[in-house]
Image: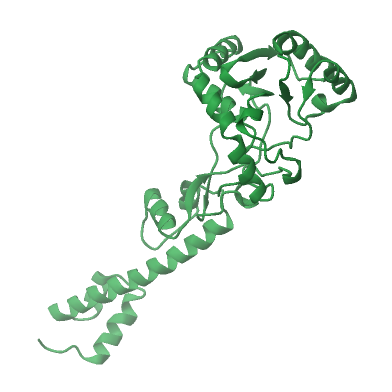
Length: 309
């Protein structure tokens, strides 16, 4: 095979930087061997450009973790056309995976019930209120590295009571005893006390302990006095503690089943909530209560932070 002259190689490489292969063929009288050399140079140039672009894309995604692949693709102008799906594959191969942004942790390790057995937790009644949206907010995805799930940069910003919604209150006990009620408007001190007088105290058993989150209406002087005269309350429960508040799992399961029914208005939403809530298996609630000793140990070992990344 005849050799290509060095000066011809230099000319081809220099010309390919600014012109296409067809234009180079017109400028340089290339032979079939020189055409093979041109294809090799073109391939190596594209390969270098792709690696460089991948690095730039990785850095751009790290700088803006909440940008979707479609948004990155829209603002990107690679030398070679790339699909949005290819963007996802490039970022995933670089260790940046699309994941749901999480809420930040605020649990206080010193206030946890250390050493409580399953039998003691079975005597605790968990109560809470929640807003149920008619049209739920979409999950927020972010692109992050493995092990950074709870990093503040990748936790979503929570917007409460967005869109049409209803407020509901419930409590759960071991062996599946439960109650759910609808609340008009937001819960204040007097409304909270009325809920307990109508829905909890009549069913309260001697020896049971009430758990409630540290919301202002739950811990006000008048509410504390009202509850102290009638029931025993579990003190110093940390606010916004998803790893240890088992009722959050009940809310999640209830909302998931409620939205599957596709209610069209707030009254239908309430009926769907009741159906979904009372359809939750007793065994599901029992297992949540039985998992609490393990959860407490895990949170204490994590010094009050999240137990998983």
